[in-house]
Image 1 (tube, rainbow, N blue to C red):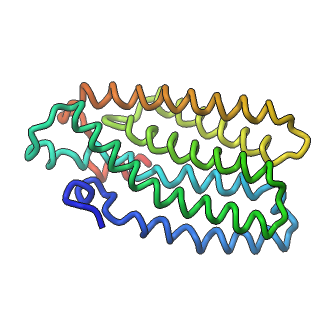
Image 2: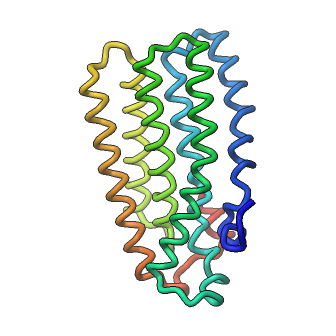
Length: 212
């Protein structure tokens, strides 16, 4: 699936990752059942999986070098195309995660409230991880690393609160709204990075993989 642009970006085969998530999730669920961890860790575990799906976005800038030489786009237009490509890619991986959340969560007799908050959390985790990856257009500085740590900690904290039956609903809603605002901030940061993208500073793909 996908076209030439998706092939260069690395998003031409979204089903590879989407389907690949099923096996580790099923194995982890079996372990959780045996250890009676499922009610408190299920949403937490899936949130971690949703974050890892955006890792490929960190290679987006370095893979655009060849495309930049062939397409007559501005940097802003290039970012819009890249963003659209990853949105299509994320729809597959997120769709599988949501189906697994509802199907397995229902079999574990998780409360409807937890499943509802979990769906929003998985979407936010996927979006945030994708834009965190898109801000990597050069050497990874301490600010980028600190931002990534803050995002992950915020997601983990929200997952913990959403899984607890004693957490007030308004508290979880407030946390997810805060994550939504954080996603808008990170998206704007990525857009600005791409608007002044310098191909001389863009790291080779092997260097980005090593840093990750």
